[in-house]
Length: 484
Image (cartoon, rainbow, N blue to C red; front, side, top):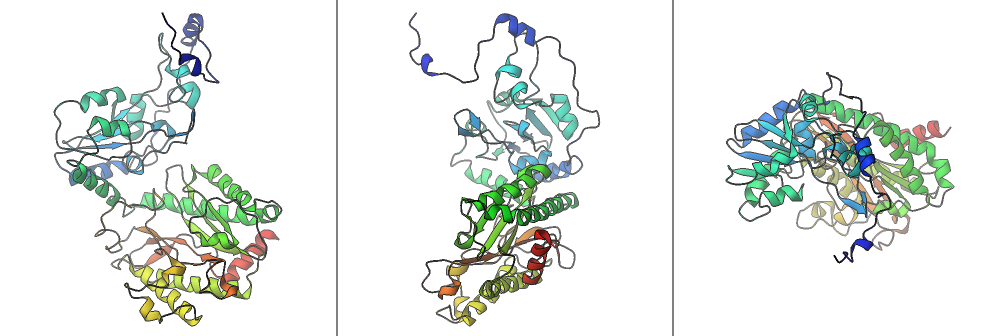
């Protein structure tokens, strides 16, 4: 027989042959390690109502919501797995052990979880020690099927049965596409025939999260509280960061350490932007040094173990004290944010806070002589010259995703009205590019954003991030206390 010429090219640094004796020995002598009988997912008590609402939105249809698959980072290393937010919302399962699992809501309304059980340690079984992606010796223990059912309250069956379910004649079926290529392929997605139905499912899954229940608000408050602590960690790390040629990354590490210690990690890549880097809205290179004469824009959020994230931004004077020009820009952005926050209440248009914030910004730019038109002209939708310096909207919904509910229909979100229980950010900013010749020299290279998280209440909004100072005076005092 001719040897496979490619076999010599396929090597793995961790691969060693397993003898028959070793294989037999590996299946013997293991003590039982059951989960505690009272173990439940943190959201066990709220997820049934969510699944019921989803089923009621599509009566008589099968709904398929995958957790998602691993993605390769480099060669044999995968990115850390995080289940799709819709799957986590409906099941309460948030761990890295959910790779490949799928929730199916049947036409009867019954939910069934298709899951990979714990690797068996029986003769002939190799997965628990030989599978790098799923084996227990490599990535840790998964629940048994009965344990998964105990944790979630959802009937749980072996993942291997999903293929048979999706084979042959099917009831009307909608799939959350893009999460799991294998599920998409098994259900004939994407296709023109299914695009509308699947798009409606994605929209409803997002809209189910627009109004947060009390438990979700608690989780978001927890993420905010940890984030506030992380911001203090960053200020305390400033002296060491100033001495490092990549001071931005030093500060990124300070915040990310808090995020991993207190939660699942960061809810998004931490933005640590010093000086003119703050004029790049999503600066995540974080490879610059710190200059004590400049500002630092820190945009960061801790994600809880239940996957809810905060999203807070502060712009700080690296020296601990704003210069007069820096304070002038900061105070204008703060006034804009305060104006936006003042509009928040049930029944207000979602866009109201952005309009209020932009009016303050535009009038300030006009007073500085920056605008080439009047404030009223710039505020017109068909002109909008101020957007050269502001660029984007002033906030978004917040929850399991940083930009939560993004696939909701415009009528229920962007063009909708606020309701009690919604959680959102208000984050106006001014980004005065260093090479912008429409600006006076003293303004060039200054970027300021102030962002807070708020929950809509019965008569207004509660500032969830109130423990983090907002005014220039309070920021300076806070930094002085932390730095000693």
